[in-house]
Length: 485
Image 1 (cartoon, rainbow, N blue to C red):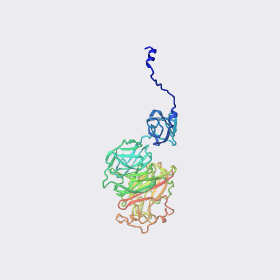
Image 2 (image 1 turned 120 degrees about the vertical axis):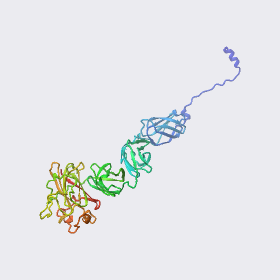
Image 3 (image 1 turned 90 degrees about the vertical axis):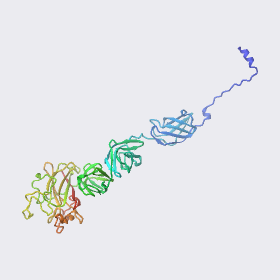
Image 4 (image 1 turned 180 degrees about the vertical axis):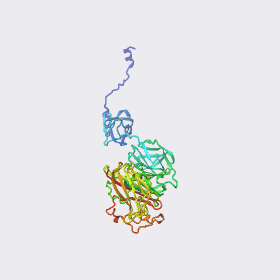
């Protein structure tokens, strides 16, 4: 159709022509505001909700930054944004920019370090009855007790103490059988490689009711409880995982020596495969490095000690059972145990007589041909020697005592000394000397006490031993001697 003909056909019809005028978004939209956000802290990847006004309902139209690092907006409304804490973000302000307007938070968002997975390296004991304490060692635990969830073979245990490397937990009621230990911290879980066995807590299971609270390496401590074995070797005792030597045992009391290498921690006792752990810790203290007094060897020293290397020195003597554990420490090496030292001991029998001597005014009974109650041992890596003997008697002008001579491994003399015994109405000295059924017939009439003894009258601080036990079960003596080697 030609143009002139088209125009004719339009006639007088009205034509509406729209008029478009430009406008700016800034002129019609208000700047955003930021009222708050939750949570206020988190690791990279944490979802954060931001509350405010004048956001864009289109997620991509909102620019959110965490201390200058752009975050991804996952959902949006005009009053709420959901964003993800970005990689490489650091603690600082949150900002929201919409259509050129920016709002910044008044408070900082704290970017936390990503939690590291916990690990379990060991636990002790490896078996125990319900109610016993066990110690789990590892890494990346929470130092907050409630920040750790521990299970034993699937049953949740109570955490009683926590550091980042060690947890103390109680074997829970309902736990049974053999299985793994798990530790969960910050949602991350570690599983033990070894199994823990929940033992059956019958009437014969041992218990620990109390113990000597502290002591240095080499000192004797007493553990009180029930259902211990009366045979020392049948009780396994550890102090914070380090095995201690049991020197004496009754069904209700164990005497042990704090072992070299021990550190402060829980005490565990195992009897017949059942382990009980103390609820409180034993404290290993520093040794007081004071030299032991030198004393006379007396008129009855061992004539040929190298021929009497033995642990059992009883011979044909009778009396109350007695064990002797001596620890030798080296003052010149920080009172650490002295290994391979030679230790000779000798003492009288229940009647006050010595072997290898006699037939003189000093000792009328002739025992020159026998060698009872004399022996030599070399110290082990803990600086310890042990002897099996009978409880010594006494004789005129002397308190109950034991003679000791310590040598270097090459035979060089280091110290001659004597060991004193505790005194008092309930002491072993008094109770044994009243045990006429055991052959101790002298009693205490005419006894010379330490304060009047011609050797000990100047003091027994460095020579006093620890003696525990009973007449029926026997006694155990422990003593530490400090030499300069």
